[in-house]
Length: 285
Image 1: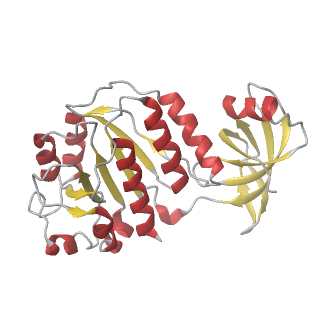
Image 2: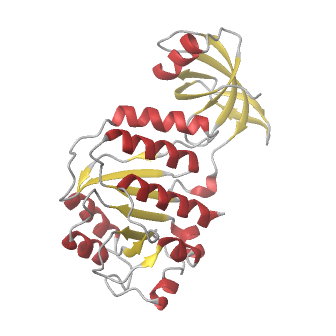
Image 3: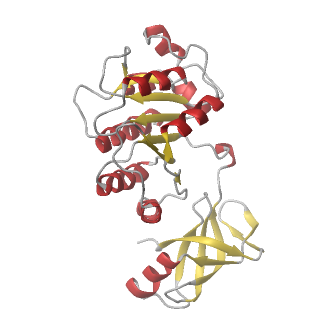
């Protein structure tokens, strides 16, 4: 059985430590677990000074460390070995970003966050649409769910959680990012092939139930878009209970979003978001 893994947000000092991949490297000397992690370490696992643990910073680094001080408020550990470092090739840009309208029941969003994080989704965004019934999010609790799911699935990267924003603010940001050539045209086989061309930005899709525009099945589109995905990643926009309004769909398409459908069945909002996360991860295999 492997070492227990913890999440640390604060690091101090600098030392030359052993690296399993590169001999000796420079790394932080001391790390401090978050209060949530410290409580788990001290009260649940009842660990003691001298115990060996794994620590990740949520940004790709993974260390083997020895507990120096165990306290329910803040556990301190000395880093002994670098097990892995952040992947410089990633460039810090998320591969898979799911943006959804908050569901009326928070437990449905929390379920989605947990499962999609375990699958490897890099970024979550939330947007308040015309039919959204919730205008606040339990951000602190959501962050805790992301940390727990990251550790459970033995990942080194904690997904980014974007703050809830209005539809207008979201669209302004998307327009500022630039819509690709051909945005707003009907989606046909040629447009589907075009979506697979390399591009500096992400492939952007909007899933909705209406027939305002021709739609392509998301999984089929992603199978043809391998080069585009590798070059810029993927953003999928999921609507609220009641779906997007026709005006919102039109605005998204003009901002460069490709209309997609998620299989033949009508899905709940959180199920649709998880479907998109699954399709995205399968496209990366």
